Length: 611
Image (cartoon, rainbow, N blue to C red; front, side):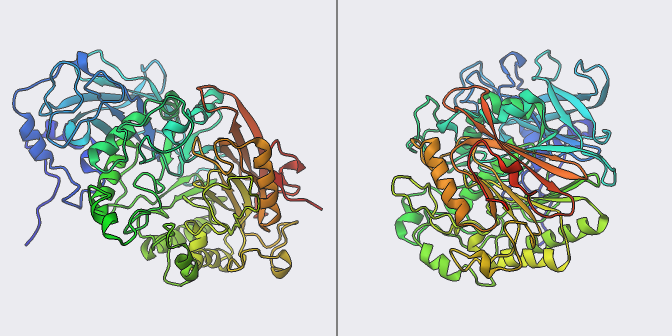
């Protein structure tokens, strides 16, 4: 039997355009009936004669832009139909919104939003505009594509409720360069791992206050799924809902809570984001078919979780696509988030999904020894064969077309790293000697990637990662990772003092607020002690810092990549105090961290001794 299209349209062309222009009715995949929204049914339900009062609507969660191309960018907002900043969710599909505190607004009433893009902040020179409907079916979110823009150009944008003076905050965004443009400079801020109750997201606002970048890269753990029982410092911030989240409504409410942080709102408002998820957007230590709590006992499948893992994953993915300024990838798989963007001939960015898409079973604590025993099996993959083949083609195509740099956004650390700690007085974080939830648990998958780079002589590779809640800078090399403490003398193809033999560099960033290696009560001195140990026991690691929360920035030119790491002095209050921790350079064609590392001096952490 031939299936009918999931997305159907109104017979009135103008109204049809207003519904279908909101990309979230297509999120996350128009090819899956369980996830699609029938615009036809929503429109019929909305023809009941009900209406809304613009005076009770607010743009509580600000505006956002993302996934820029040379001629378009994604714009996002939410028309919050209540007064409470966090209790603002649309509820279940087709039902009246929960936590409603204002005048009655039935969910059958469509809300119309207008949007426009201008070259000036006064919004006089408008170059693109449109309208879109939204409803409770998609949590009152609006996601549109502004087209017809000029390459590598800064624009301003704004939403308003149709036929009213209710306006959103003014947003600022920037398109990408044309693929073959020889732009001279592109800058990124890189973030990961923001735990709402553990600290204020000060790091997100820093690049805005300095106006120091063009784009934001987010490598995952944008939200955490835990409840308020999760241990950590008491700073007065609470999750909503207050328990671990499973349902679509709960994931939506968690995003709404996160979007009350002023610095997160500030970053979204001023920079286009290019984001991918890690594990906690769904659950801890996710893989293709499960997560850390599913331990093959009856309780883990029946009592602990109120929904199946498949349903939970569907809920999480849908909420992510609704709330993030994410472009819909042309796909036939509802979980595809991996994609690529070119920034002229300067940078080719590849964003991977090494968590949710098709990852083989990971270390879920109770099977650590088992995963260690199978870590080198050829069949194990971080990405699955389809994504892996696509990734290798992206690297080859970028090299062939002459792009200067290949920038790869991965969730977990790629380089071999020994994360052991011999110090009983240091908490040591949440890692054992080998973090098998990283690429270390998928050795054959990592080796295939390195083989592709080395055998095809593809250089100038810059890998990025988050997840680990500490800062690491490593030469990208092929070490024998079956040895927990490799001796540089046994690897003559790589010299850690000169960088000879490296095929690129990996930059790993710490968390925005999530717990680090030395725990909540750890000191800078303890972090330094642990960093000193880490630098001695890892041949390819050139700098490591294990105390600060923060972020890093990348400044690309055709001659050199400059990377600067920043640590936040205090995340218990909202403030703008930061420390420049270290600076690094990678020169075109050298494929290694410049010697001496960081000019031989850093503000914190440990660097590799130089000749």
